[in-house]
Length: 244
Image 1 (cartoon, rainbow, N blue to C red):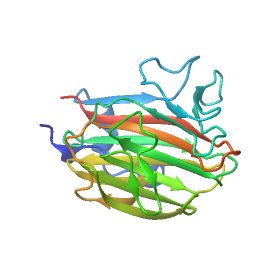
Image 2: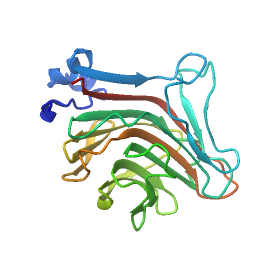
Image 3: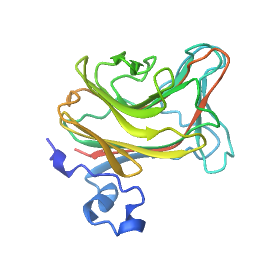
């Protein structure tokens, strides 16, 4: 088994601001000893290697538009009450091997009547990993996701579960803003998770997930009212994990 203590941490602009001290975190993605999957959503079509998007409801879709400036994927909730759109990458990753999943997402011009999730889950075809944020219950059995849900409040939270038992649900204290870009990251080592927003640790869940479960990066957008479609933009995602 690889040494999970060597799993990199996100840098998130710290090189420019601070002169980053963990040099190993900078070179690991370039090393033959690490696998890096990264997609910036350039070109004229979404990559065919992805599993099918999970959608439900009128006009719900995961869409790619050629020539989007900078490149991004739209997760469109559609106009059905609780309609949704979700996209996974593939169940190739485990905490027991160590992994770092990073995401750049942008919120729409209105975040009322909206729910979204960003992080890691044990399925790419759930109707959301987290079913209810306020009094947590879940669809997924093993996950670690950022979750925002206006059926609850205006604050971004980080939730996790292990083998079907919700282990932690923690508000980050960050009020989700409109038209705002967030850099989110989840680092998993064995059964432990650390969550980052814009390079800052906002949650640490020891024994928070089953390290032997296969996980996929996961992004999900849901409408919380029948007439208001919401779109979460995924501008980039990346996973770094040991190659063997």
